[in-house]
Image 1: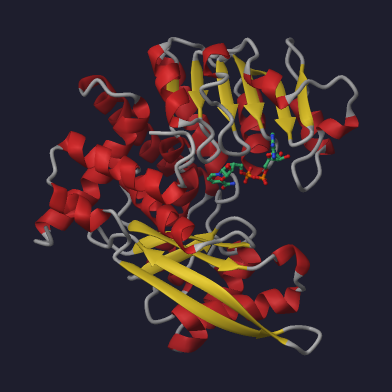
Image 2: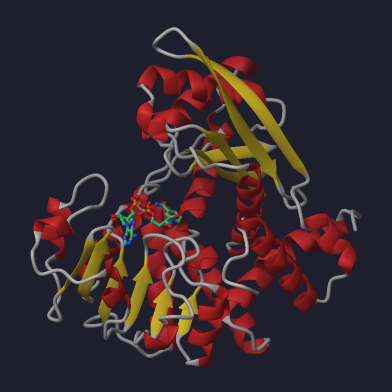
Length: 414
Ligand code: NAD
């Protein structure tokens, strides 16, 4: 597969490949190659200057054989129909990998929230829920935050849905503020999940986390919490980066100081003079490399120069397919994004469970359950990779696809 296929086509390729390896027929691929449902909506919003602006939004539901669909809603100028479809398919795989009782969903609105006021964002969020209300709900499809959406937006959406249904429905959406039924531990869940995957991968490679040299690309929500967890576990975080450059110290960086100085966009390197580039950061001598920023960072150009023993993908799609092949041929253990970044959706699931039962857990309980889920998911993928002699990425896709394919078969759909 080329390095420049669009996301939708490459996702179809991945699902086809995983199903073929599992021995499913072409008919199963026909069912799973696109979402079962895709709704496009137009949302009129009266802006602060009195004019009406009409926004386009989407909600895709990939496969609901396992259970209700689940996935975030992003607000971004570059949202498009194919991307939303592809992301709903990725969510199906992710939910299958972590063994959640969900299929994948995804939503998006074409807008630029950075240029909109609070009042405009509230009207847009509520308008979106009114427009998609027929196909969503706690037992149908459960949205969550994604790029440029947050707990405040989830709160407005939950309130709008509850008003429409005339009953309080916290289980309609996850990622809510704690007072409205949000879960403890949600904010740090992605980084917790990455940490658990690092610990499990380190065991497989006989690397002791205490003293291990860790390099992290990106110092935002995922990267900065991860740096803190690694630092607290006794690892030596030797390099971190942001969009402007990277900091490196072979004796280990002062993570608490950097956390204190970073801004809300995850920027900290601009405060220092002796920086290196993000390209140099990726090729540093280390035990564990964690891309936690943007996609397409490890490519066929630099995969031969990666010196880490373990690469754990906290970001979405940081390694191309060609680079995945090169890393696995070189014996580098790659923990793929669909597994490593599944902590967020797992705690979202816990939030929904707590909402449904009306009984709330402590942060320790959430972390304990997250640990159990991810250790089991990691080992399931690892064993599939060993037994079927495929790389960890394909193994993860096989584990993820198997559950929805089995559920579709038992229901008699294929
Ligand atoms: P964020 O916006 O909080 O932080 C992004 C970080 O990456 C910042 O430090 C930014 O400066 C840096 N960055 C941006 N462009 C860069 C570049 N060209 N080179 C190097 N660094 C660059 O984002 P986040 O929430 O931490 O997410 C990071 C990645 O993790 C994304 O790929 C995201 O999809 C993935 N992810 C995040 C979550 C989550 O819950 N936060 C869940 C699943 C996956």
